[in-house]
Image: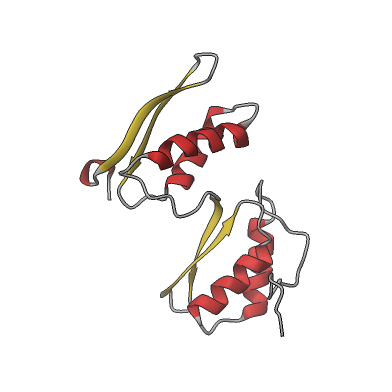
Length: 149
């Protein structure tokens, strides 16, 4: 949907602390605030982009019209189709997340029947060249919490 057909939830002119105008940030209905803010900050070419993004998110997320369900942006997204072209969903890789963890999360949540090895290999080839995507492991972390028995 175009921006005109969606409801504007938050909009403001953004400047650096030094007063340099960065443009207008607008967040529309259906958008994840952190992804919009992240894209805006990445385009602004700031020295401390992560710190600026965090401060800007603090302001945006305080707004009653915005729901911030996460503070970690998606930095890579790939739509997955089956061999007939049917959309099976999308693999979303969060900032500083291992590609393999995102692929395994997609497989578990979607429960699709695909060639898992081919999918993992394709995602390594396509996503590993992108900034802020980690490719240091080829085995997923299944449990990330201590389990008390």
